[in-house]
Length: 458
Image 1 (tube, rainbow, N blue to C red):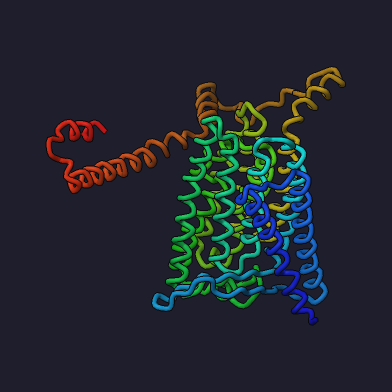
Image 2 (tube, rainbow, N blue to C red):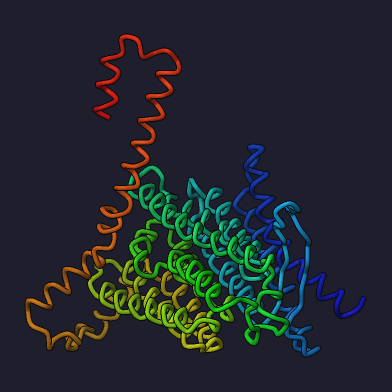
């Protein structure tokens, strides 16, 4: 076999193994024959290890041959000739996707092994790892996506698995409510992503990154879009990235996501999922180069989000929420680096931060105990009373900042009052009209004064 054929084989194994894992767990649950914890753990470790070895083999081949881009093309899954639309599945191995997929597999393997012990004999053990396998497939597809359609597929799987695991403890109302809130924000971000994909197809007739970003491998490509088109598409993608990574004004969902089990918090909101918005901006960075205004929008959003997260993180009363805002601070700085064009720096920052934050969240359940043990061992408090940066502000201003940080910038309240509530009222009105017409057409309007009064009360 030639080098190119070996690349195709190893590249295919990289994204097929997570799909096999999801299929095996899903089918076993579907037929009512769930695997034992031991067998599931073996399948998890085998598939993640095989996928990681294959990704490393592709990396080795690329380094040995000097190649900067390798493609695995599966063709069109859906093709509509009348409107010139197709859903193209294609995977790309380059300087961005290979480090990202290796990072995803290493951290998923580590957190998966931790979860096997952490959730031992838990009632939702099988359900957790079904969603975990779905997340692994989504991250693999998103990391290796060679078309915007493939990236959208992985993006959706990551979002769905995230919402399901936030609501993992479904016997309590709070996790379910937070899972639904996160899912609603993801829906808004996904709508922006879909609008960007449609705009790209309308502008160029393609969603292929190799054609959109030019013939040069990442990050040297040049977007085949006009300045105005780049601004339009880039704005939609920026909204999608902000929703997925919890940037302002969508930051309220990030601490709510900590309702899930510790393994999911570590892999999703400390390591991978929270960085997916930044990864999207890295992938489409040639579009940012086409519009100076768009680049400044990225920088501005990153700076605002970093300032907000740094302020809110300092007043949190639990360690997981504090780590969530610490993650948001670093992700925001990564976004600023992307806006300034420091792409390799942003990629290195992303990888380092994902590894560190994942470790911190896995250690979170025992961190406070270890802190107290160390404090008792040395015989004094570890808090040296360092002065606050905002100490120069007046007492009134400090209180307002503190209240704003405790309320997380009032963003949840503003979104509820200005967006969610009017939206719900509008569709409740539509629902009332629809039910009224349905009753009228069904002939139940005769002698229905009581029914009309009930409808008005609703």
